[in-house]
Image 1 (cartoon, rainbow, N blue to C red):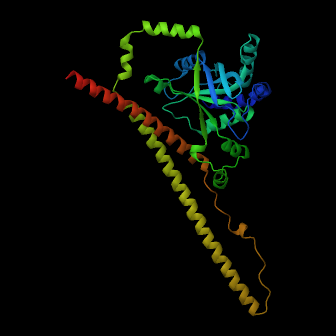
Image 2: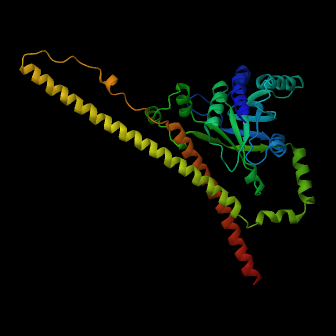
Image 3: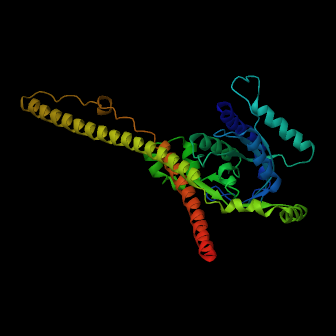
Length: 352
């Protein structure tokens, strides 16, 4: 997986060559406002992403790939994609950037949309708010303003509803990432909280009329028994796993809070020591002045009292964002199951 993350970042860098071509379809979105208001995905792209995970994704294994398409006004149209190949760190001869360039060159030869518009990634129970994803999306979005990242959740999809969401970094977070200053003061100045890190872009899945007719025919022929799985009341495993992951993130947040409190105590203690030192110096200068002696030379207090290093606040924001994601997943899942329980209760009362 380490090689994949490196490949994602390098892919974003190599995609900068397509920035000019992608910019031809750019709409009215400026740097102060989101350049993309809607993401339109072809059904074939969705099937390719699902197929990629089914073939290579196992358990917590994350699969990633490149999204191709074009920008029409404020709508991003994703018309094709291809996966990052499965390889390990031992594959020293494999060049990720060269592979992507050859893929896009081949697609251009057969007159298929080949412009880089983002990337996709699978997730395990919604665990995608990480520093690696933040850095990769910043690289993509810095090179091509309209870039998005698609997050596919196979576990939630297996529960009966497709889970595919598009995210972008907010303009405020983009400015902070450009400055590469993640100190508490910089994040406070930029008004960066976990709610202002990622923005979700609405997704519309589009199919041709022929595919819609085919899906309608297949739906008529599908067995009715297969649809009964949507009414299954078994939810303990899925809900328990989400709660376990939520508790793990809460423990990490509590550890970060302890580190921050320790930093604040050390800072306060140092301020007291600095104040006491200044008072002693002032009293000594007064005594020297009464004896007719010259005052002591001024000293640089910043060298005598080096301020303690503040803890990184970006990690805490990412943990808070992941906690918020888990809470939203639990909220959605429990709402669906409560609806099933009320419906099952009504059916039981009707039968009785």
